[in-house]
Length: 157
Figure 1: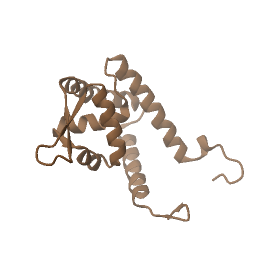
Figure 2: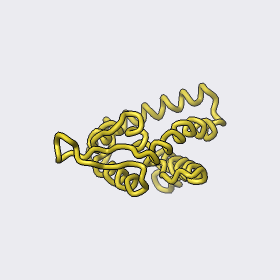
Figure 3: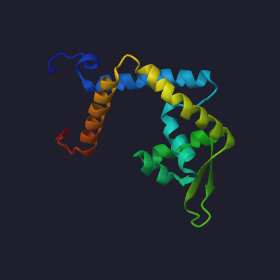
């Protein structure tokens, strides 16, 4: 590891993973935009959750996606502004807001459902099936460790 001099983009997994995340998002955003789906990759899980599971509360979406409610709120607001989703008061509990998909959102979600698998295949075409399985396993292992780690004195233990 690097202590004194370090190229954080080359030497640290934290920044390598962040870098590939940015590349994937940029490429996918350009592709979907070119196809007429003006939605950011980061917004797709929210749209697809409502598409697959029907109307839900913002809290249910946050729980389903392991995201904080405020980030889901921002994403929902953006998707409402783009006419992909609607938000209405719950019929039984007026404090809750129900998120539903619009016809435009359904059309986008159907396209995304079909294209996201193709996009994934193209982006990772340089990996064998075995390498994809290993990478998936390693990423899951990292995600579980990071998610379950406790921070003590600024370090993960």
